[in-house]
Length: 138
Image (cartoon, rainbow, N blue to C red; front, top):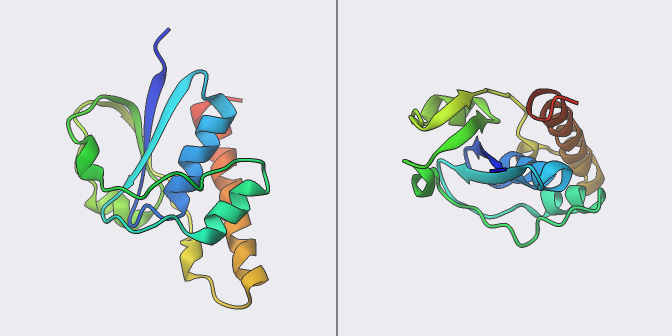
């Protein structure tokens, strides 16, 4: 059986899309290939890595990349996880399904390190719930 291919998109490919990629791989890597990209490439944010490690998921080796790398590839689903990426994202002609999930940008969180990490956790948990409901159907 071929694995379904899912591409998560976000502006900087530094937190939300990276967490989504790691979550789908951890939850159903036997059935899905998960990818992420951004309209710009930056770096995976340390608080995103930390929030995921709390679930036993290591995304520290994932890298930020631009969506140009995937244009022309076939995907079962393309999922922008922020409004800016949804607006800037090209139409992936090879995508069977396009969803749009709007999550707040945890990199914009202010306050102490613990207060900032709390937003990463909230966004992580919200992404997981959407993956389970809309991708995995659980």
